Image 1: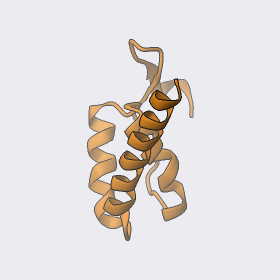
Image 2 (image 1 turned 180 degrees about the vertical axis):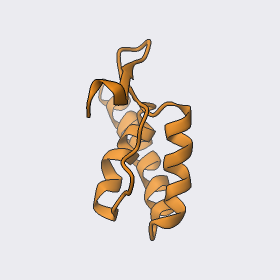
Image 3 (image 1 turned 60 degrees about the vertical axis):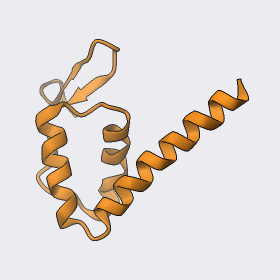
Image 4 (image 1 turned 90 degrees about the vertical axis):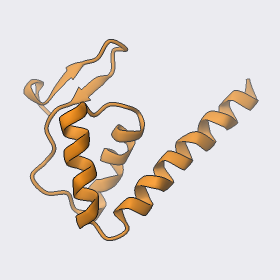
Length: 80
């Protein structure tokens, strides 16, 4: 990723601005992580979510990524 593809958000995270031209099933996980972590800007998020329709099981994997994030947050909160 180069400087034209991302910028810093107010929280110091990188907001991704450009998606690759095509997302293979194996490439979905890093993008789901970025979505869940709030690292995709609005247009990129919209583009990514529209691509989930083209990936078999894409929406299911998206839902599971959010549930996994919620479980990790709860587990870490309970551990502290």
